[in-house]
Length: 77
Image (cartoon, rainbow, N blue to C red; front, side, top):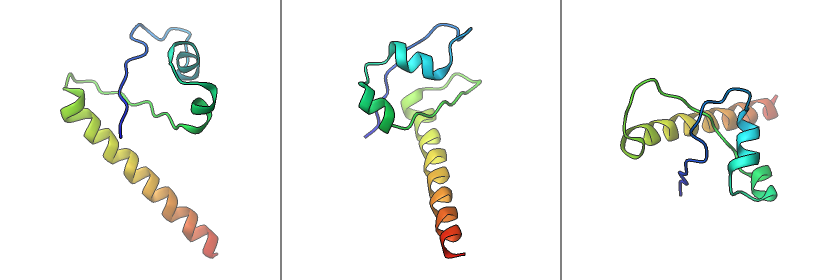
């Protein structure tokens, strides 16, 4: 299941992604420690749910798959 919530919309200025999550999200401390967060950007204006989200999810899935394969190869050597 994918959770999409806009928690911050203004300019980043001196804020980092970690500070935004700490100050503006509704996650509790345990969820913040165990949930991965990915920051992705797009220069065009596309619908999030129909276009960008599926594309970003595929990229993340490929990254996780490659990481798992890399770890498995390293364990065999």
